[in-house]
Length: 344
Image (cartoon, rainbow, N blue to C red; front, side, top):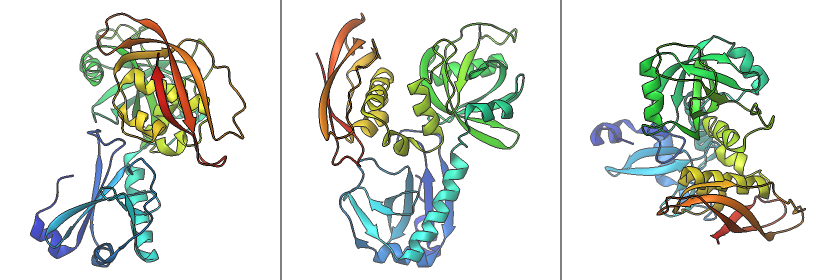
């Protein structure tokens, strides 16, 4: 977040808010407003709970105190956290409600509306054109829905749009899932796309040989007729609901998210599944077979092994490996975390 001019911000009591889907995202939405009462409450706030969620909020607050910029995190409910000290800051109820209203308004502008596929399909009828925004890079392009009964089969409209789509994936076509916003007729929908041309073509001269797929909440693949876990995670990221979604997953679904994060090198997803910042030392990873799911409803921890295919960070060939997962939670009402994942 770029701070305002120091003297102007300090004199006016200006509060700056910034929201983005991931700390590394380039796509962001900002809001500045003046509220001296709120700034005074922030300056006088007392230290509160030190047992915070291990994931930083997606919204950052900046204000000046004694001429120095201070950066804090704000949750959707208006709770303020000092992420450096790993503690919450207690504010009067009125100040928290003011922040909650501002944060919710900003997040509504930044993220997409989450619609089930049956409703999204009506908003985006076949042959409709719309804008697709990648929530990480902020790059956007125009696309058109050409077909698709279980999700949207889409093509870039022009050569320029195809080039932009390719640049989102680092200059090469990819099956990787990415959170996107689909904008049409004044509405912004949360969605997920991959970037691999395949199947039927329909727009000549756009430098895109085939179509790519855009998924929405509950949409399924044409082949399996089941929801793709990686696409569904990205839909929730595009709606600003990633942490809430992952915190409610079963252990088996959580492992799928971890494998997807490892496959795509998504460090935020790894942190959401494990509760810790992690590095990833593989280039690709995919689950080989279905889980042998156990009843974990009364367990607080358990271990399981999952067979995968993977390519190591320094390897060139794909190999079959096994990953040993250890999962824990504090109580049967709390969420699961993957505490360790050992590749054999």
